[in-house]
Length: 141
Picture 1 (tube, rainbow, N blue to C red):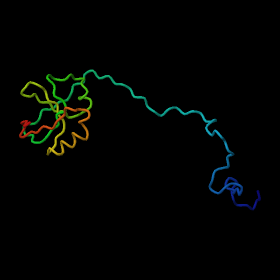
Picture 2 (picture 1 turned 90 degrees about the vertical axis):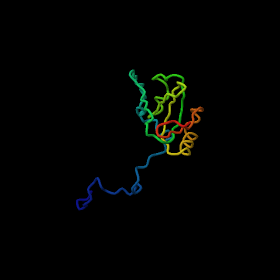
Picture 3 (picture 1 turned 135 degrees about the vertical axis):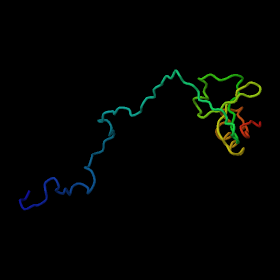
Picture 4 (picture 1 turned 120 degrees about the horizontal axis):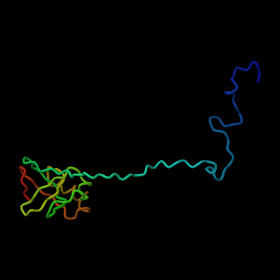
């Protein structure tokens, strides 16, 4: 290096390498051969045991007017471990005149919205599901 040169050695230009590109690497048919395998970044699911699970069921309010979707009708209350309690939140339950229990979800202002939701999301999983109407907390059908 010349003593009159003002460019620091680490910033000297190298006209043999492409401008702004990395150093030339000769062709390597297996570029990952010399790399160490990194640990997996996938976090394994862990099952959590919950012994005191109590399904959260709501009563239909006395002032409720609208539509709900009955996804299950059972002759007696379902066990706390039944699938619907883990797959859906805000479930409503009502004891019907024949003694069976109706399990419902949703709160729709009109039948069209309820039927659309039923056909788009629930009918495949619950073929017996149907829309029910309430007026002032009383079930109409």
